[in-house]
Length: 228
Image 1 (cartoon, rainbow, N blue to C red):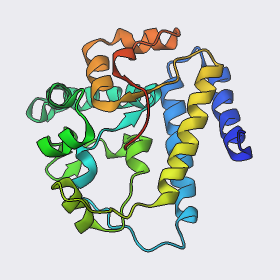
Image 2: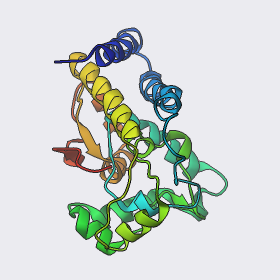
Image 3: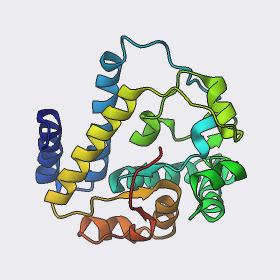
């Protein structure tokens, strides 16, 4: 049974879809609302918990598979294009980094990903270059023990203490957004972030096709959201 909170969130996203369906602002409106909802509520949800260990310069979890909805992917796609077109774009080569990461990790299991330790394409000089538009999956993956994260990524069998409220809130918002998209007749699945971005960066028409109801990111679609 759908919860009252989920129903309210789905109604919010539905209102955006109803009023901006013909506007080029739809992608930003949906993703920004999702991110704003998360940031506005997570502090209250975690006030009783100890401080997080997650800090700038700690990319331990960034080798995990990241899932995202289509609006998140298309928003990041636009952000990456802006970086590529900027003064440091040719030096950073973000699109190339994403394409390389996708080729290196596509189809790998979580264990294989950790074994390869392929660097996250968004970590530039120790920081996430897309941090302002990072997807809900990244916002909702938070640890209380930096050492345990490092050990896990090194292949050791350790339990990483993760924040349950972060994961729950992420899931609540993501599910509500997906349901609203489905009701509006738009593809509502979850996609592997690097693969989805590689597709969108290679073909600008994929965003337009998605807006018309075609699952233009289908090759990157994932069946379940078992990880980040």
